[in-house]
Image (cartoon, rainbow, N blue to C red; front, side):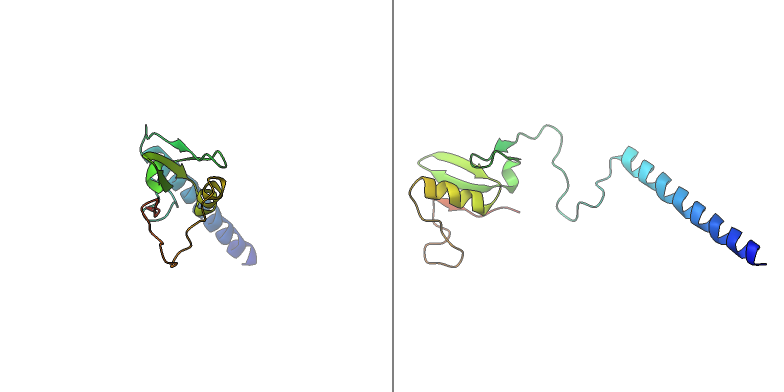
Amino acid sequence: MLRAVLELVLMLVVAQSIRRVLGGVMQGLGGAGGDSGPGRSAPGQGVAMVRDPVCGTFIVPDRAEILNDGGRRSYFCSTACRDVELRRRGRAPVSPGAPGAGSPRTEPSRR
């Protein structure tokens, strides 16, 4: 009796494992996005990426922190990298909620 119950449990575990593996294979073949979350899917094929001038990370322009400076647009992976660049240029970073936040020199992230 105990042996039959253990064999049944083992068969259920094996069947569940096979189902998950096959489901993952089918999802991969179908090109589905996986667990990237809502609105965080990978960019389409052929999207041009830009390089963060501070840390060198490549980012999609739509998800970057943007700094406009005299007609030149710079893209950053984070507000921390943007603030480092502002300090290099001799400007104080704009903190959220401070007077002047959202000034024309910086644009908020579109994340």
